Image (cartoon, rainbow, N blue to C red; front, top):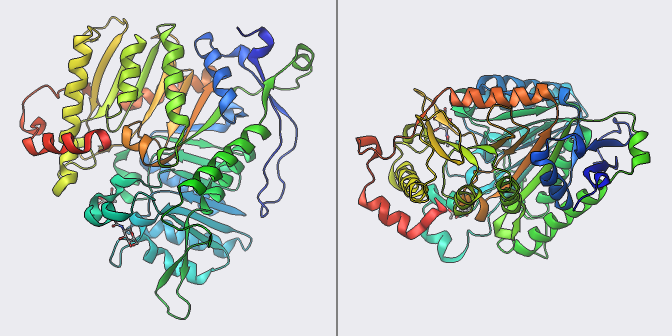
Length: 512
Ligand SMILES: *[C@@H]1O[C@H](CO)[C@@H](O)[C@H](O)[C@H]1NC(C)=O
Ligand SMILES: *[C@@H]1O[C@H](CO)[C@@H](O)[C@H](O)[C@H]1NC(C)=O
């Protein structure tokens, strides 16, 4: 299998420099040896490194936040301090978020070299009416047309009959721009949270901050630049104040037929990134001469089912395959649970001890919505019932009341008065009592829609640092503080699944 030397990865320090950014980081090579990682995940990391780019850093540069308000304050501070580039990728910007836009405006005024790059979803950002993201951003664009760059991604699924029959409120079901990356110069905040008030106050998400990481920041910036080649540009209408136009940058590609182009752009991007972050074995001599060692490895994972890019699916099944051989302890926490056949099957087949945390119907962002959207929490209750029935049938239930840990599946639901739940991820503990050594985080919802339709950027982080591992354990504890044993089997009012919802699920399946 793998010799000792193959367990050591050498990461060369080549960087992809955006033209605008002065060289700030040293070109010194960085090294990580997978030999120091927990044996549970070591071979998984080696395998993942064969496919994905890999970055390394020191754990002291990683901050994990728990509270949306703290996330928001940090985001504002990053915007205030950005000198050269500010790059924000989200589904949309909420119309109440005046403070956010004003902070960007002030930063542009105070830092004459600052360029702002926004990457958003077209349909979410151009809804009719004065409150659309596009209209909110227009004054900023009119004021700094050379320094504000707004890219809007339009899903190619929105065409033909589908575009005509699907009501606007529901058309996110047909594929969105989903990455949530908030970058300022060489620092990054990575979350699942959109730029909307509720995500800054009472919607629970995950928030990981990486300080002074030019290589990872360049990666994220270059990812957005690659995506801008198949996105619209938002521009002020020439001569008409208060109006905008959408500019399509590529005369040789029809904006509704971007699949081939997007696929090629993303594959090429990831290939160049993988080659320049060359993951290769370190020889014994090289290892002896290493002057320092990082203790965190990060692998970016792109998923874009519309363009047949499926790194996340490969990565998630790799995780479970590697754990299956060893009976370990995993905690996937998901906002919308178990719509993904892939993940449910992986959980069932791996025979590990697996705790799952899902939003309760009341903590689902669609609870109480009108129309079809309002049925989404019910549909999830239905998925959960089916999943738990399969778990029981396979004799894999790990009852919440049981304190003993054995291979099995435990389902909890997150509920907190006045809050909704949007945190997603996977944490891997080598044993039930140890803190996690690995986590998957980012924009993915870990469900079928996310895998098949949305464009996602997620990351696998692995660390040997006891301090950072403890902070990952604290993050899990924070989320579990509002977890209750699953109540979806009950026939209470809030768990009623109306016949219409069953019919809907029969039609759209797990694409909700
Ligand atoms: C998406 O947005 C564009 C631009 O506003 C619009 O022309 C199109 O009809 C929208 N698509 C759907 C399905 O609503
Ligand atoms: C955006 O935030 C506002 C204020 O909290 C909330 O009312 C609204 O529902 C949010 N929109 C979405 C789509 O979450």
